[in-house]
Length: 99
Length: 428
Image (cartoon, rainbow over all chains, first blue to last red; front, side):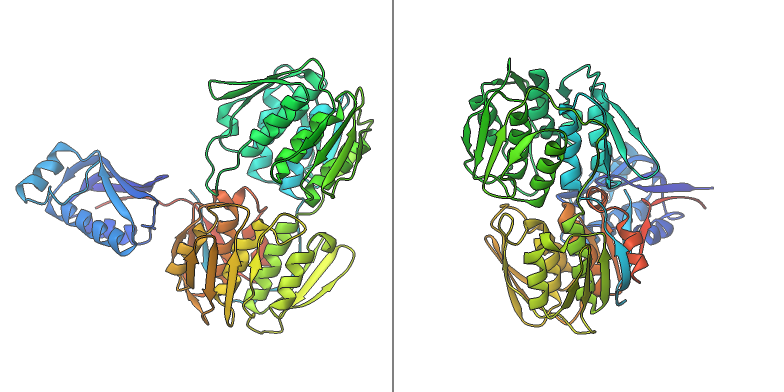
């Protein structure tokens, strides 16, 4: 069983659990109800992510696109090493605004 | 963080009662420091800033008792410390209002400097210069204003610019000073008058409040002698609900208010096409289903059009017929609501301190972010007339100045509810 949590914070939201093919669709649906219009920057804390796969990374790209549509800057905080490694292998690490 | 979820399109109809004015309650609570005996203050709004003020006073050792009607008995007979710490002041600039009373009655005060402000610079130098001229020794150390005085001495103070809290702070300081103090270029706001009335009822000798020249004859001590004082109604809250009614084409009667302190706002609402009737303590606005006409305003200190109503009128102009020009002269950074309204489809062109609004027939709902108290209110008003759903985020700003805004608007027929900060956990 895969578990995932999303919780609003003062500057954006934080993710805990798994960002994978199993949970990505649900996370996408839940996050669609959130405001992306944080000023000056929307921060998404990934410090609680225990495992990720390419579907999880695709979700980050979708959130980047949504932030752009909302005229907001976005930053991903505390990305775990395993997630960074997938980003490196798939060569999207250069595009991710990491903080 | 809670949000307000608004579904626009409902016409507001009905009656509501406004709360006491936050901007009068805060200085009056601070002024209770001057009394040697307990005083009871009524019609206090249930707002976060009031709670913060109570924490501030409580931290000094002052005894506070609150009854079920939000009357607060303040007994500052056993004050133990004279500090307003940074942790409190940074969340509420009005904390600076304890400086004058502490210094005047106890000869010492240690108050954190307020720091930055979202809507513009609001320096406290006028407070400090005035107190220095009255004989206080003032230094700034480690971010704190440290002030001392054996007994303040009355003098003539000409304020560089009109400042409400500056006038209030100096007026409170002068009450127990030796001799006469004359404050020239004083703020004329009704909340200043209410503070003077409160102080006079405790035995102070203040004349001219409500005019540019206030004269205070200092006395040795102040005693409430069982005084129960009711704060004046909130004119900005009143104005906000009237604008809400005007924007939705509705009919709303605001009770427990004071029409005589809203002349500039009522004149503009009439210009927008509203039919307004007033009584001694009520105002009724009827738009007869019409769309408001765009109006032009220029904010200035009382009795001119209040800066605290600018954002709400910007919201009204956004959906009004025609073009309205809004010029903000009081604060330099007070159009932060405009960008959010633009996201809802408003056609507003900003040029320096002027917003040129071309009214559109309807706005569209969007997630928007509150940036300050009155900006938040204006976004709620915009949401009331927008097609679809509007989510107003960061509403802690609105909770600082509007008591139960969603309940009061819902009572008038608005579809609005508070939704808690989102939290989701799932297993798959």
